[in-house]
Picture 1 (tube, protein in one colour):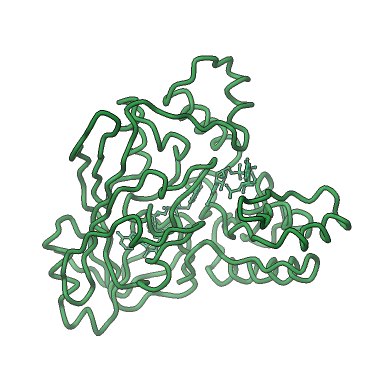
Picture 2 (picture 1 turned 30 degrees about the vertical axis):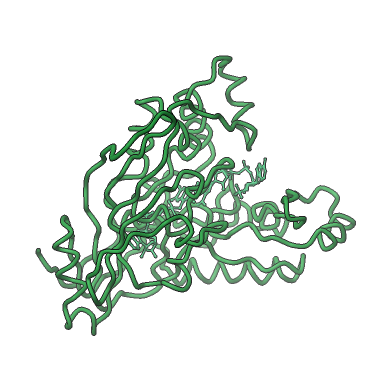
Length: 338
Ligand code: FAD
Ligand code: NAP
């Protein structure tokens, strides 16, 4: 393993924030991971893990050791009449796993096409898009405990998945390196096209015969047309989670803002579209220097070039305060602030 000091990070986070890691190492094997997470020196300095860097905001130089997960491998580990169990190593690109499933016509993750980042982070925030979340296809994951080096298998229940949440962002934060995830995919796919613009896009393209590939292609086209490509404009996708409020609070807001966008959840609460709140608060397309709010999707904060992590965070807090003042709603970052 090659340990690098003062590693530049601009190319390693999709926000394109120029800062450094005091110490950096790539890991390509389970024994690499185990060696590092049981090393007393690195344990005392502090260990952080990174995959694709597409869900972090770097607000300061990183001290301690940054471990870049590059474990590779995608394999079918079991199958039965209904399901295929596909195991992917944590350093695989998530979209490559989706493409692997699409090529084999296995259903379940086609709506999650083109989400940046790696397999290891997919359970961290229970990635989701177009009505599907990782929890819907999750079978198990393996993680190595930071400190003991013990390999533990986590079940669906152990992960405590919720909307953009898991136990790894809460009670077990910073305690494990996820090394593989196994997904349960359907041999006879069940399609979910009712969310967002999928149906509209399928109709526009004249698709009447639904397939895993047709849906994946539609999602890719929608995402490409709406979301800024991080290699052109720095961003980490949706900066905030969609807030949930009670049905009565929603009714009150509707009285003032009849066009407010909210979705009634089965439990009775209402999920607000944070993008709508931010747009209404006047930030959509807003820019100051190199930091801004994207012109097509207000939920996405962007770095046009040389913004610092603190610049982005200053805009984020400005948005949080304005939305709170206008609507009485608290926005919570989805992105991990480092
Ligand atoms: P990183 O940013 O590297 O890490 C994120 C967090 O996970 C950090 O806390 C890190 O320490 C931890 N982590 C990473 N790997 C491991 C590991 N192996 N073990 C332990 N901890 C680990 N997200 C969605 O849910 N849905 C979307 O539709 C979506 N669209 C996006 C679109 C764009 C343009 C962008 C830039 C981002 C989008 N995201 C979306 C956010 C992001 O892509 C996902 O959260 C993704 O899973 C992050 O993966 P990563 O490898 O880049 O994680
Ligand atoms: P969109 O389709 O314009 O929808 C706006 C918001 O409304 C979304 O946030 C979505 O909530 C919600 N929504 C839409 N249809 C819904 C339905 N039928 N039932 C319940 N809620 C509904 O959103 P978009 O920005 O183009 O994104 C499309 C999908 O990709 C969304 O699922 C979004 O979460 C996901 N995405 C996520 C990120 C990220 O970084 N996390 C970035 C880009 C896109 P949800 O967000 O809860 O789904």
